[in-house]
Amino acid sequence: MKKTLYALIGALALVQAGAARAEEPFPHKPVRLVVGFVPGGGTDVSARIIAQHLSTVLGQPLVVENRPGASGLIAGEMVAKAEPDGYTLLLANMQSTVSAPYMLPVSYDPVKAFTAVRYIGSVPNILVVNPSKNDVKSLQELTDLVKASPGKYTYASSGMGSPQHLSAARFSQITGAQMEHIPYKGSGQAMADLLGAQVDMNFDTLPGAIGQVRAGKLRPLAVTSAKRAASLPDVPTLAEAGVKGMDVEQWYAVLAPANVPPAVLAKLDEALKASLTDKGVASKLADQGMVVGGGPDSPADFQAFVQSEYEKYGRITADLGLKKP
Image (tube, rainbow, N blue to C red):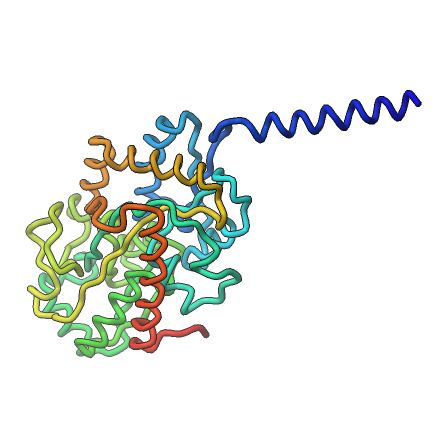
C-alpha cells in the first residue's frame, strides 16, 4: 500500500514539474544558432554580429554553433530534425536553403521542414584575385587569361550550389571562360587557400572578402549585383566591366524547425527585428557589405518567399546544367 502511495506521489510530482516547465516563458534557457559553414565566412560573420545583440533582447545566451559540410545541408538536417521549441535555430542562406538541395542529396524537404522566422538581408558577391598569383587588373584581363588556357585556372567556393559556384558557372556560360571548381566547407577555408595562392579566384560573398580587400591582400575586379556595393563604391559591377546578364546575391535568414508554436515564433521574430533595427548591429552588417532588410517583412511573407526562391533556383541550376551526382 505504501509503495503504491509513494509511486502515486512520485508520478504526481513529475506531472507537476512537467506542467511547471511547460508554463515557463520562452526563452528560459540558452538558444543555439547553428551555422552550416566554417568560422570566418559571410554566414558565420553575420551570425556572430546578430547573436551578440539578440542574446540581450531575449535575455538568454545565444550560442553560435558551426556544423559545416555539404553546402550547409548538414546543419540544415540537424535543425530540421530538432525539437520545434525555438531553442534550435538555423542561420540560413540562399545556398543551403534553395540551391544546394538541387545538387546534393538531402534527407528533408528544404521548404516544408522549416518555419521561416525572419529575413535578414542580402549581399553581393565580389570577384577577387590574389595579385601575387595572378596580377590582373581588370575583368577583361582575367577573362582573356582564362580563355587562353581552358581548364587551367581554378575558382574556390563555399560548396556546391553556393552563390560563388553559381556566379562562376554563369560567368563561364556567358564568357566561355572555362575554369575548374574547387568547393570547400565554407568561405573561411576557401579564403585561406586563395590568400595562400592555392586557387586562382573566388566570387566570394562580400562579408567574407571585404576585410582582405581593404587590407590590400586581394584585388577586387567586380561585384555581381546590379548596383555597386556602398561599402566598396570604386568596384564596378560585372555589367559595367563588360559582362552582362548576371545579378547574383546571397541572402541570409533565420529558420526554425517546422511547427514552432505561434507564440514562440512571434517572440523570435520580434527579437530579431529589434536586433536588426539596432543602429550598432545594422552598422556592423552594413560595414560587411550587407543590405539589411529589403525582403519579406513577416514570417508568412518570408515562408512564401522561400517557396518562390526554391522554384527559381530549380530553374537556374537546370539552365546551368548543375544537378545531383
